[in-house]
Length: 423
Image (cartoon, rainbow, N blue to C red; front, side):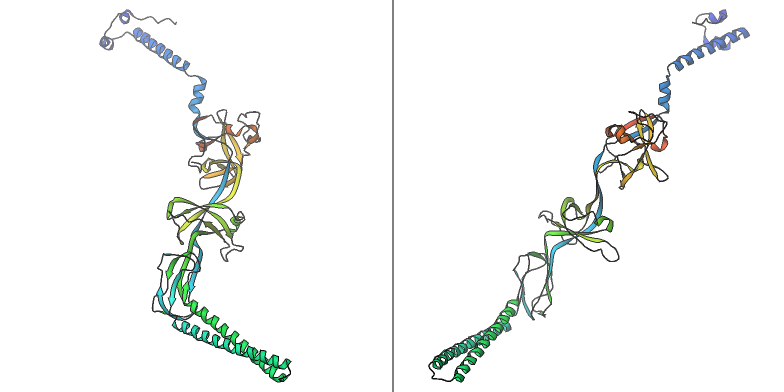
């Protein structure tokens, strides 16, 4: 230990009051000695503090704090939301086939109806009278045909016995043919009349629900007048349009999830059953139809809007990182990896991008020449083969403040992209 400089006797006296030191005049030699002691003690304190700071602590103070994401290859489906609308699986407008006055209507809007159920009854008195008249004509024609047949048979026997002339036989044959034709004509008229009578009772052509009633009792309708609009809603269709770029990824039969705005709490699934073979004029979009079951507890109604979650492309293995982790230099994209506690720049190829995520190829190429490589990876090496994917960490927070080779202090390691589609 270094020797303490000589102190005057007055300063070496024990328990000297501080007030005495402050007010008592000091000789020049004593003042110089006191300053020497102060400087010596200060140097000892600074030396001890400096000895406590190691080179590693100095480097730690300059390390850049960052957050990283552990890169793990995973399958990823690139998706897009296609707006669309629910439509009835079948839709029919039931119209009058003959003229008449409406007597009764049997169903109101929203009511279910089965195939064959009576919807409307028209006044059928004229048709019934026509059927009765033609039935009488048919009966008369059958009687005349029976008389003509008996006369023909008698004339044939007489002709064979050479009792009557050939002319009489031929006349009987002609009378029989005319009566037969007359009966056929009357029967045809009767069949038409019966069809007209049936048409006065209008029935549902399918299992459906009533979407609209067009007529009321007492109205006169002509052939073609709409009576009811019917929609079949089990199953239903969800219809949307896709661009020419996306239609090539659909082949039919795919299962697609659908979200309905009016029922956000329920998930629906549909199967692609139809893809338009030609694009719409002007928009060059293609109509796609899904068929979906219509649950009783959460029924879908034609006209409801929603979105189909369509897969544009499937990636068997890709890296997902926040889009903000990517840095760009010209037409190149790169990011920073953490290797041996330092920042290493690696170029990457963007396969696809979503709103907040970038889908990267698993072939990351190390471009840093100054940073240390691990497992023998040199500048320009493919990191996908230089290390296991689970060993790679990419900087996702703080990357804008670092350069390659900088020392890094990892504050947090994420296992998947923050707010990612896998949350």
